[in-house]
Amino acid sequence: MKRYVFSLVIAMTVLLSCVVKVKASQNYSNQDFNSIQIEVDMAKVTVKTGDKYQVEYRGKQKFTPQVSQFNKRLIIKQEVRDSRQDQDNQIIVIVPTKTPLTKLDVEADVGDILVQGLSLSKHSELSTEAGNITVKKLRVKRGLELQADTGNIRSLHTTFSGYHLEAETGTVSLNNQDKGGTYRKKQHSNNVLEAETEAGNIEITK
Image (cartoon, rainbow, N blue to C red; front, side, top):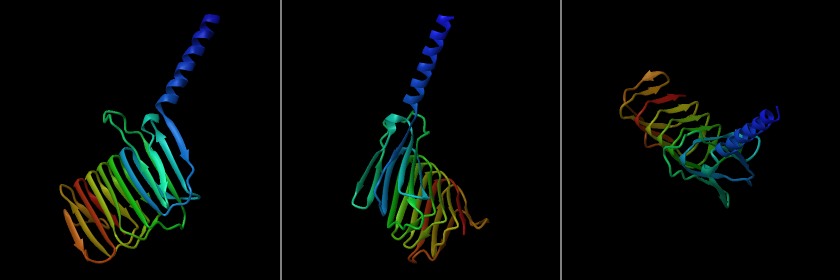
């Protein structure tokens, strides 16, 4: 009986230590910021509104990103040297509701990008080499550029004055109407959505 209990304790200890080593959840306490720059190798990136300024990382400990702040700019950078690792890493940035941002730039090698509920006063860019991009309920003043090498692009309930949309091997859909592979309208106006995907579809729902 003692040997059984001892073996069980060892097994539980090994199991718990493995869980701690594999996954990590970390919150960062940040002062207020009005622009965001994110560069990641392998992570899903979410930027949305909430109760307070917050940055959270969920994923492998060794892939924990570097988080810093220069004046009013929040800077997040992540490096992953082994591309064979799993992709279950998440970075979540929360901006207080009704707090405007001047600029948002997100660049991901592998990972989806979701941006929701923000106000952007300057031209911003979101790009991923392998992943989907979704923007929802944004208030944009000076245009937005979205680029996915392999993945779909969706813009939901966000108003733009013009469009320049290209899906090289997919289709462009505007309010559930098929526009083929390319759609352009008032592309020289001040608030243009520029979206391009090499292997994926573009969906616009006003």
